[in-house]
Structures are given as structure tokens and as C-alpha cells.
Image (cartoon, rainbow, N blue to C red; front, side):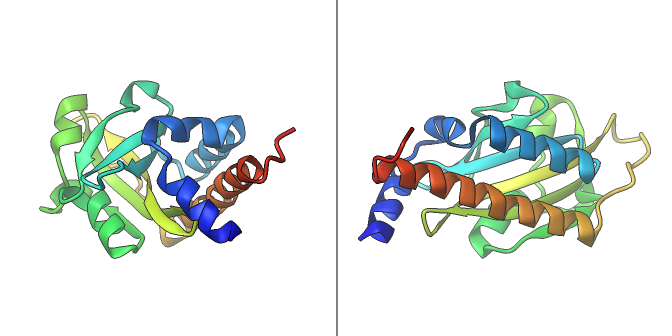
Length: 177
């Protein structure tokens, strides 16, 4: 019964509401892992209610990216979501499957990327991505990510899943202090 209530509560969370669930503890974890893997940016993308788009609900360090959306059929973040597999790629700008829409809009070049699925409420809900950027197409590439970096982002996904599930359960069971 609790499991069903958790799944129902998780399914009802909009990308806008999700920000409040991770709060300061989740933001601190994002910043710590971002620093540890030497990423320039880290974002949580949650599927909208229709599951047509992934929407950025939290990002470090630039909050202007919050609300950005990408169709679920586009780019490597969508591939990770659809396959429920993590990916780590350096020189991502050379990959034809990489969506360049975000890069164009923000005037940047994504050089390296890690994407890992993000679950809560017992269901796949989105992905966590982190990137290394370069100043332009002719600028040198950053050092890139390693398998160890990808594993750190996977662990972050698990920690955030537990945090969000805890917050949802305390609300469902009316245990909020």
C-alpha cells in the first residue's frame, strides 16, 4: 500500500515542484559531485507529466538553465532516459546523436558529458547530466570524464533518489516535523 502511494505521489510531481523536494541537501550534493568530477555544469532533468520532454529542474552553477526543456526523442540525455543506461562520452560534440540545440542557445560547446538515469517512487523519472564545456569550436578540449567520474554521478543519483523518496514518504505518512 505504501509502495503504491509512493509511486502515485512521485508520478504527480511536476518538474517545478521537484526543486523543493531535493532542497539544500540535494543542491549541496550536486555541487560536491560536480566539483569532484571537474564538471562545469550539472543538471537534473525530469520528464514532464506527458513524458514528451525532459525539463531541467535543478542546475549548478547557473540557475538560468532551470526550465529548459528538450524533447524526449532528441539527444544523448533522451537516449540515456529511453535506454535506462548511463553514458560517459568525451568529444561529445563529434557525436551526431548529441543535440546541439542547448549549445546554440547558450553559446557554448559541450565537450564531455555524463548522463545517468534518475529514479524515485520506484520509477524512472529523469536523468542527471554533467558536462565539461569549451569556449568555442577551436578551443582545446577539457580533460574529459572517466569511468570513475560516471560511477560518482551514478552514486549521486542513488543518494538523491533516497532523499526524494524519504521526502515523499514523510509527506504521505504525515510524518513531517
